Length: 316
Image 1 (tube, rainbow, N blue to C red):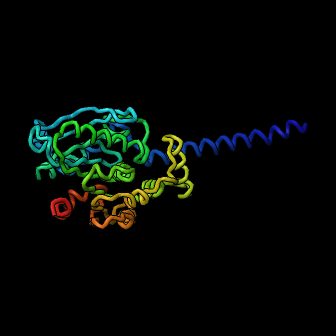
Image 2 (image 1 turned 90 degrees about the vertical axis):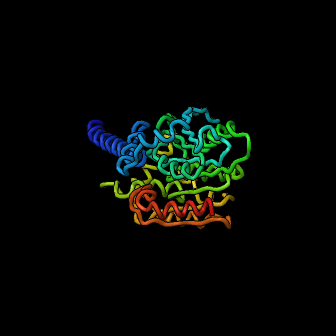
Image 3 (image 1 turned 180 degrees about the vertical axis):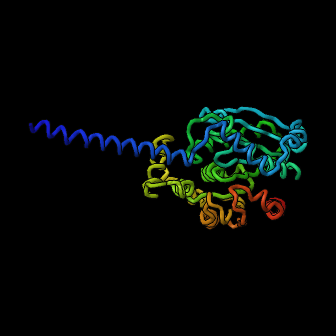
């Protein structure tokens, strides 16, 4: 009789525990998807839709620049295939000042083409590439700049294969692209570049995740939802978000830097941009704030101000 009673108690408890476990597993997956809710094909679509919304004429762009464009896949140190789009301002003129543009989370390299065109018109060669898990880069992990910086090194190595005289190298990164740029520059490679422009950098990995999850927790307490997302990301990608602090990276950057950030953008914390700028220890630094509320749309919404600021920073 006792045995039956124990079973009657244990079975509901087991069912309850399994239900809770499944709930947290599903919630963790949902939390993860709220940050990385895309696949490689989706990133291409996201770029196409935003460029179309901003009336960027891709056909016209390709008609003007395709003859001086080179699209190749190059292997990075960690064995990853990096898709590169290399455009010369003047056909086959590789010995020219060059800027590498790194796209943000959720978009392929084409999202950087409007900015690239601005530099091309100024006579600067541009190189864009797909980040890990984006576009034609089919890597299965996102490491907040660690392995991504190897891909950036591969891109730079490929560029150097084409040049025979010293040129000025610039680095321009948006959103999560700043993770790659700041990680790379903090790893002792500052001498590879002459300047860096960072748009909407984050202060740390956990803060970035929390910002992406704002208002998406539903009935789950916000802190618990954030914790589940971080845990899921750590397990899936083999990283430790708690130890990834971009402000410590900023302290090690020793080339001229321009930090651009937005106020009033729900997907981005302007405070992070301010903190990142303040963490830079170099004297040659500047910052600019935009009122544009659309994520990564300051270039379109405040184009004159945006282009004047970056031109002044680069050309003086």
